[in-house]
Image (tube, rainbow, N blue to C red):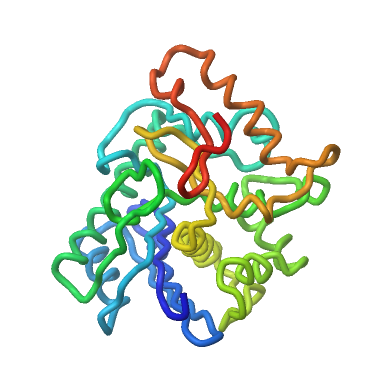
Length: 290
């Protein structure tokens, strides 16, 4: 794709601070540009923040949102397979996702779904359009997907190089990848012969970093290289191309693949949530791990 755009949204819901960050990632020629907007919880302000990003007609190849999204942008109360697969085993201490079933998870689910619907509404009424989903088992006919910056970044790091976390997973992983030029290597795979207009090491804000990762998630989906982890009904969390996953301490497979292969059968033995029996890992058009 010589020219295009994706949108990433890192969702926050603090009542008195602007903790949601939107990142519009656009590319043309050899340059990738990032534009940020921050907003709070007011619905009208959120709608305005989205529309203000687009001064000219824009077609989004994908939209990636950091928060639980399910088929038909519906609402669920239970623990999803995507979260279970990325929480067991070695994932437990590597920035695992929260549970949608928890009080905080329900708030994040509500706000993420609201943003997805606001984007679709803007696409109907404004200068914005969103591409149709082309990957298997999408949650919506539009290319709106779920991002999770912690694990997206962690997947790119060799197991021996993963930093110790203190409730700051995405920032620690970001800094690790900046140090080894990992984000530029990712961009070289997703958009060959392109480079960031602003260097990743110059992005200091936690919210801006997370929104950038969401946008990169959308780009991975748009380029048909993302890996989806979850199930067909409750949705997928999307990870970067498996060819870039970090090496395990031992063996030939990446540590994330080893962990997911171990967690798929564990997710099916609980028997409490029916959708967990449908858990799988897939690439753009095919199942990979079942």
